[in-house]
Length: 296
Image 1 (tube, rainbow, N blue to C red):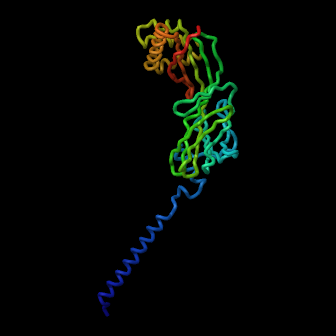
Image 2: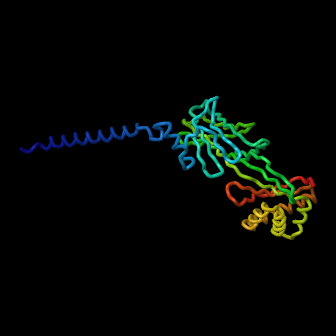
C-alpha cells in the first residue's frame, strides 16, 4: 500500500531538522573546546620557548658557564623559578625563567664574573660586561678586553604577546623587570649571555698624522692597517681583516684619521681608537673607530 505523500514529507522534514540540530550541536561544542596551547602549563611553556627561539629547551637546575662568566637559575620574591636553558652556539647560553603570576615580575640571576668588570648599557637594552685582560707595550698601543654581552631582553606570555622588559646589573646580580600587566600566564623571560673578546688599537697623535699623509680616505686607512702589522700575531689577524673588508673598513678608518687630524688642528687634541671584536668567529670583526683625548 502506498504511503500518503504528506506522511513522507513530514518524515523528511523531521530528519532534516534532526540533522540540522546535530550539526548545530557539534558547532557549539567545537566553540567551547579550549585550544591545545592552554591545555597544560608545561606544554605551553615549551611552546612559548619554541615559538620564540625555534628550538626546545632543557630544564635548568645548576648554573651555566660561558667564557669566564657563570649564570645561575632565575629567582623571584626569594624563590627559584622554573628555568630552562639552551646553547645557541659554543660561545653563548640562554637562560629562560617561567613567571607564573604578577608577583614574580622582577627576576634576578646570579652572575659570577672576573673582578674589575665594567658594565656598559647599550641603546637596544643589552648590556656589556667588559674586563681588561692586557694592555700595551707595543706601538701602536693595544688593549685586549673580554666582553660578555647580555643580549636585548625579551619576555613573552602564553598568548604569544611580547611584554615590555628591561635589565639592570649591580655587583653580582642581573635583574630583569617585566611588565606583566594584562599578561596571560605563564610568561617566559630570557637573558642570553655571549662571550667574546675585543681588541682596541690606539693611534697616538704622531701616528694619526703619519696616516694623514695620504691624499685619500682609502690611502689613510691603508697606512693605518700597515701600523697594525707591528702588533705581532694580533697584527697578523688584523691584517686579514684589512684584506677581507678592504674597501669599507679601510675607507672608514681613513675618515676617522681625517677627522682626528682636523680635531688636533681645530679643536681639542684627539687621537683615534679602532675596535675589533671576536664574538663567535675566528676572524676579528671591525666595529668602527672612536676619537679620544691624546695623552702622548
